[in-house]
Image 1 (cartoon, protein in one colour):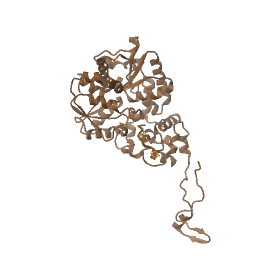
Image 2: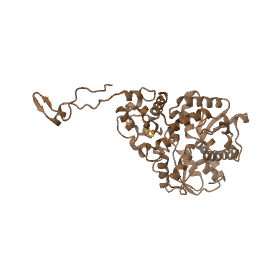
Image 3: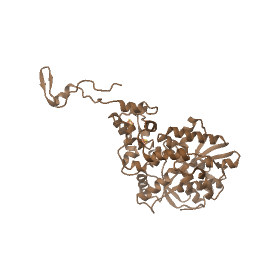
Image 4: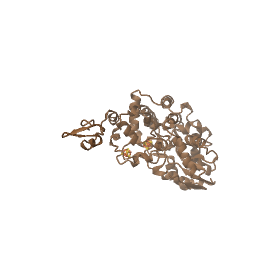
Length: 429
Ligand code: SF4
Ligand code: SF4
């Protein structure tokens, strides 16, 4: 591609001598094409040379991505801006903007040129890490904790199955069960260790038990799935985690893998096969919706409330599941589902994807509010009493946001599993 100055530029206010006639000032423009490609292509080449970074070059600045980028709604962002900054000689590897994209995929949905930030950002982040660039401190800590303890919270890995002690029902562990099961439930790090994640895990255990599902968990053999670690740029650590999980899965016999989180779903469905791990994987809402008739018969209590539902990016845009969570919510006696204006394909990201889960402190300097705060304001504006979720990242993000936006007492955050469990007679909050 030919970049660079194509001939001597006549300055705007300069005089030009044309066939002996002196032409002053602005007339000069009529005799020379203005040069607009006078820049160094090095910073663009730096990204497009990376495997996955190629599509940044395809942007033609149409601006369609700007209106749908959740970060732009609370700041000044989007692929168009990234492309323009890189064209102007700003290295993305040194730019704080490198860490703000949540890989929510809303830009890719509308981009006519298929500029793919879901490939570009992890590739550029990996390059920045490998080049020893400054990376946000909190992200470095998460990488270290995950490498050391097998979970991003830095919790003791031996306590990974402790949540199950208070589930009120047996939660079998594969190593103790010593037989094949129908469902291997991959619980995930946040439901295993975060207090509110544990509430949802216990609720799902009770639902499985009531349905008579033949299931078990890995317990201490389970590791973080690593998908958000990969998207945040630590591909090597992701591969290490994948190898450990694939090895643990291979020890046991099961028909289907059921996961709690959309990020785990994406990992096992789309990324682990590249590492040799192939499974029939279902998000828990997809699994439960298969049992909807029996589940409906078990839900004998009324949960009288309006619920608005937040579409998780990695269940919806990334993997096309919009209906299963809604079908479950509609089946809960007393629940009325009200939609937020930004929902389904245009759902607004909670800010937790692509490493954003750990970057709220860093992002504060570049955005006017957290994405989770913005989303909770939208949820409260529907008049709903409950924000229904089915991603373990969201409970902590949204409960913080409910407090930060002054909606405490007006809006609560409940996993769909918790609402179903309540309708089945489990504890209410
Ligand atoms: S929608 Fe695509 S082509 Fe248009 S400005 Fe955004 S990234 Fe560039
Ligand atoms: S993936 Fe999402 S957060 Fe990232 S640039 Fe695209 S729309 Fe914005």
